[in-house]
Length: 109
Length: 114
Image (cartoon, rainbow over all chains, first blue to last red; front, side, top):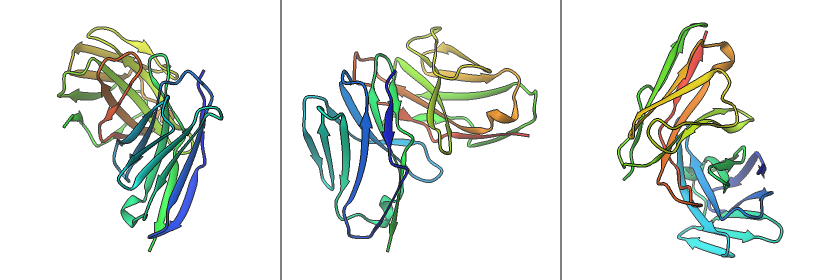
């Protein structure tokens, strides 16, 4: 089945850019997603990208997809303390999503 | 906005009890899902449903069952709770599509089994 891997922890300073990386194994995944989970809350869909796209930009968020290497990244520009959260990468499968284990982003002032 | 509501934010139960976790969505979504989230293990799919009275096993269905009697409601049942079922339980729903599974999540139920 699909396997989605991401690093577990990232620490940045406020104002810097954050880059969270993800790899997946199933090249037939049609959509790839980034979800954000704030402390004590459920997951919130941040953005997603269709597999025939290389890049998608949405305000401070930039998603890059390298389909050949099955590599997805999420860049957050001008990272704020409010961006501190767990970020999950997910890939669409036959009938459900497969999630990575999540990357905890810690933003220090 | 889609709203997925889980009936309890925190639950404390005893070993051997039968536990019901309720989830309701208000956007007429066909698909509903139950995940559990544990530190270091991420999200794991327990059960999902594509329609009323339909259910499919996810990756870790053992010790759980589900009920979907109405489209908007999906219940997770722990037949005999055990301490290893202490976890955060997340319900989600989505519109039925072939490939794009944009999930909308509830806030979660933190279940402690003592």
